[in-house]
Image 1 (tube, rainbow, N blue to C red):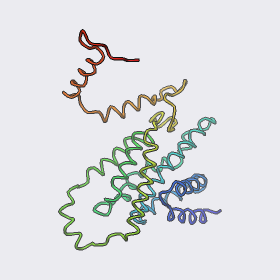
Image 2 (cartoon, one colour):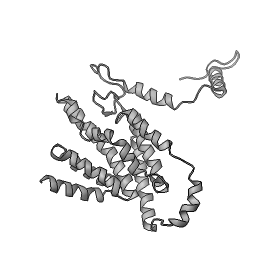
Image 3 (tube, helix red, strand yellow):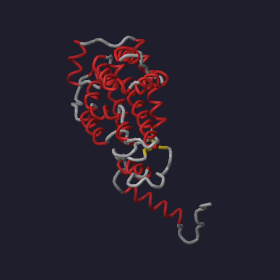
Image 4 (spheres, helix red, strand yellow):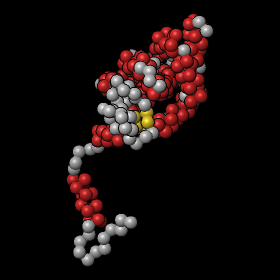
Length: 264
């Protein structure tokens, strides 16, 4: 196909995109296949649909980008294993990193219109940050922009509901509920997977291995990244922790006359 036909077919696929993995993988495969001749043009199509599509189609595109980035990292890892330059195989990950702020602003527009996509967008961004899919600082900036928005919408709801009483049709509401279930199920399935490294100069592959192998050099161990993620979400030491430590100590080392805890 010539570039014009590729663009038209890709736009048709994007507009038919839904939350099912079959639909997402079909668009991912097309985007990766035609990246060499038309990558920049296809990326422009994605950004365009994020701007013009419905609020439901925009969140579908964000979940599509999640799968697209994962596939690009797999392609990059295979290219590195084959001895090719990994920097030349970033595919769409570089585009996502560059335009992340613009994508988030389009998927979650300011005001009440963007509220249905707010929670799901934060979940995707937090997943990217914890798994180092793209530069964690870029993700942090995008999350900060969402968190910094004015959350006091109550004052504007009363005035806006009387002027904009345009709720979604009943069938669209149920369709969105079912698609959210599918998306959240997919996120839960992949949430535990940890990356090998967040070093942008080294392969960034979501790995099922507990540790990196020999010869990885300065790459960060998966277990270290997992520790960092847990440490960031752990509360400060307090009295409850002291009481729990005393209880655990008494169980393992009971006073005289009591049987020790069976550790077998």
